[in-house]
Image (cartoon, rainbow, N blue to C red; front, side, top):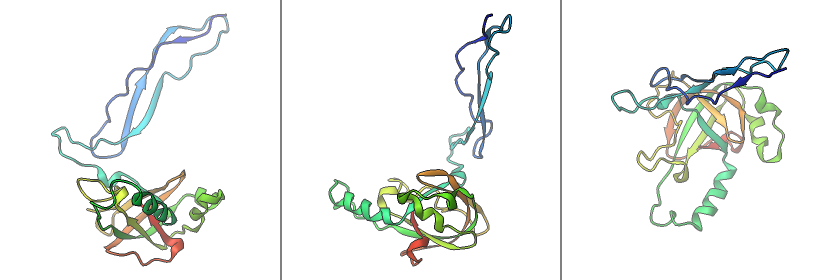
Length: 192
């Protein structure tokens, strides 16, 4: 018996469209067909999600499709401690900001999370208002904004979020407003 033999994967194709979530793919080809009951051929094509952030003309786009990556606001204390002992604290004291969102949907994986450092995910609920702080360590150095903060989104636009540490805990929300300070209860307070 001779097994199927396939070649190496091609490079990934470009994204099918700019500025919106889409698909890219790669292929490999059969170099030897299986004979006499040999091992069959594996998949010859793979697809993966992609998002291009530049149009063909080189203009930026697509940022509203990036999920906001969130974690518990408790981690913010650890960030402050690290910042105090690092180089970027004193000379660049930037103020952060807070964004309020209303959760629209979330996966059931959030409620199943019981690892001690990830229990905060259990408190996420549909229809609740949550506060997400954008602190300097998470800010883009050019824009001074956090990725996924819904900056240019109006209140009716559905935006996506994902929990850091459990990519299956994810969902959607709508931006309510941006504030200087967060005012949500601790269990509904997160950071980008």
